[in-house]
Amino acid sequence: MERETGGPVLSLSKDGRRETEKLLERIVGLACEAGERILEVYRSDFAVTHKDDSTPLTQADLAAHRHIVATLERLDPGRPILSEEAANIPYAIRRAWSRYWLVDPLDGTREFISRNGEFTVNIALIEDHRPALGVVHAPALNLTYGAARGAGAFRLKGGQRDVLQTRKAPAVPTFVISRSHRNPELEALLARAPRHRAVSQGSALKFGLVADGSADFYPRTGPTSEWDTAAGQCVVEQAGGVVWRLPEQTPLAYNEKDSLLNPPFAAIGDSAYDWAALLKS
Image (cartoon, rainbow, N blue to C red):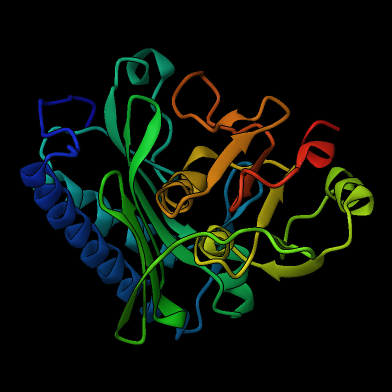
């Protein structure tokens, strides 16, 4: 799992785009398969344990992780895989990776435990520190977001496939914020924000709302890990938006340091809108 091969880089050529779209569809299928394993646990009387950092863990996390890793190893032999449930790979090894899979088998475990349906499977392909392909699948909602460099972004819902495009920010923008993770920094940002509408959402679904034009701004001031954001970032970017680390306002990047924690960031649908007062404070 730590050896990297010379597999195909996502390409913007006509042939390359076909291969990219084919790979993206395979990853959508894989995320749906992992979602089926998650739902088997979701519908049962499942037990909850806790990791060393006190975050919750269920059999659904582990079942999805095992299936995704085993399938990626068959689909893309030798390509490194970094999953939340197998993240203890030293940076001395990771720093040599130019391309690798980044996986959160079950994003939103708290939402899973509370049974509100707002949990996702996140699978991303990272190339040169940026997400080149991403799938966010919400099995309980029968909802999938997918994107790849050069292939655009789409949403699958109830058998319908829609091409995604972020929207121009309206006079009263919509902010989407975490349902389970709020902190004083976020409250301060919301307090100084201009008039806006706020909605709450769990897991990487917040990126989907920005990508499909349902929301304009997703600020995250509390801790997240790289597997939480990569797939959703790809969807937003390929739909026309940006995901900026703060306060630098530069693209959120991956595998650049020993820690796998992200800095504060914001997902933005309309980068031409004047967000400066919020992002620089």
